[in-house]
Length: 303
Image (cartoon, rainbow, N blue to C red; front, side):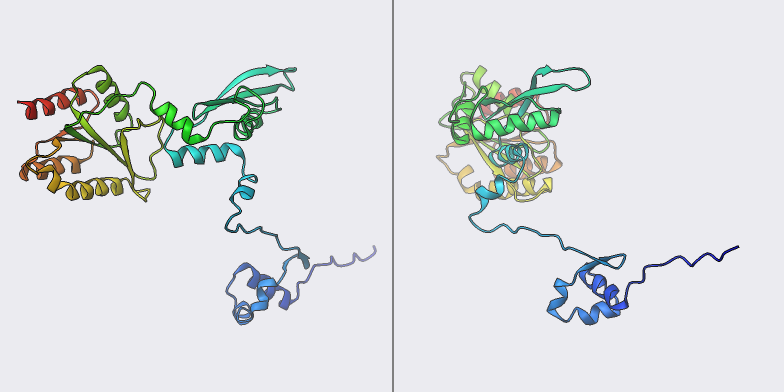
């Protein structure tokens, strides 16, 4: 029979709401008015009438790359190094699992750039892979060397292993890696198996979206368009071929024929344009025909 007191509600003052809207970038009339003052950038956010401390962000400055890299997880660092240097991604492998079923411990190794390292036991697979990447990055413990080689040395050693030799004169091969990413493997295999292959130069093109799964041979000249659009690599190939046209039709030229390796329609048109200018040009759109077309190109300028 007693009256129930009314429920209290939290009332946010209008000024606080305006400050909160301004801090969040909302465009209410009050926020627009306060937005003309530089001090609004320091206005606190409000949650149920109580101020919430602003988040603190650390800005990176020039020369702080070493300090900032320590804040990244090392798996991301290795992936970035892989993309930047155009080599195979790190390969993680579980080598040991201990402990009870309900609380296992995992241990992983990582192989990257010709160096292998082993991390410590961790409670999850993700943490174990991160520990392996950390061991590779720091170069202490595990299977890797106590002082790891530089990535450039590791890439050079991996790339130059069992490598084919280029001919002094012969065929220029233009490769579109975006739609034929395994072409360099097929090409290198053909060149190693064929003593008189006739390939004198190899130029590979890709966009930023291309992610190499294998290291490139050192004799490959790699051109990467500064765009995620795959057409950018095609445009770059056509543009550079146009710049080389004078050399391709010179009387005493080093390049006797051109083979364009791509599945895109532009490659057919590029071949036709080169042929109209007097260049012995060929087009390959699958891996199976690569060897036969290269043999045909070599035979055309040898005869």
